[in-house]
Image 1 (spheres, rainbow, N blue to C red):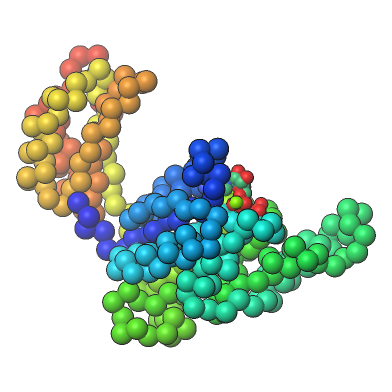
Image 2: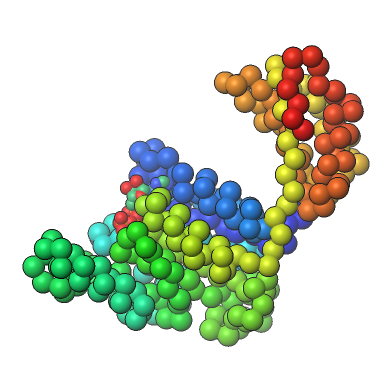
Length: 283
Ligand code: ATP
Ligand code: MG
């Protein structure tokens, strides 16, 4: 049931993910956080460390009406394979420039490294200069755990009259559209999201209610009729069946905006397929 008004598109950037070397835990973690904030993921996409791939993914996301938030993560570092910043700026048609907050952040780290005797000069090296840059009009999201700051850029409205991104209405958090660029290192990404991005820029929306029924040793086919009944009687509630084969458990999960309707839908399934002896049913 895709009734969600406000959604997020998550774009993970990285050849290591596409190649099967790295598990995309960033998208998985982000999907949970944005759902809890009331901006559930509409789509998760993984693209290569290639400018054209990143540009295309960002432009696809911008065209989606319900994508009020876009998160691009990975490829913000100093190495030549980190192309996310430039590609996103290109996709948004914004020039890249030194951002005073990002500059101050990198300068602060360099000065502490110098004071600790790790580097000879308290000067920003050429590769690290990249992390002082941001697209024009961006806001910096502080990264307490690393050098690459998070970056927040306002987006034009997908259904708008083609107004300039710079004219985005920043007064109403639910009317705002933002794109965030985050570093790929999970610890850094998570810190920025928890400390900066969610509290300040994912406000005003309400998370859907989630209710789960857990059956042990249940046969999935037994749930076809109960789920069909719920789909017919509760078009405003999404129901899914998720067998956890290794735990020998079946999770039936209900999701919707109205907590009472979600509870009623779960009760309907329980009534049609009551838990048997030996089955746990915390729902
Ligand atoms: P850095 O400043 O360290 O270069 P970055 O923003 O450039 O950070 P990446 O180079 O893309 O980030 O990735 C850094 C590390 O983060 C990688 O070694 C990888 O282990 C991890 N990483 C990247 N993307 C993901 C992802 N989607 N899920 C889990 N881990 C990831
Ligand atoms: Mg990378």
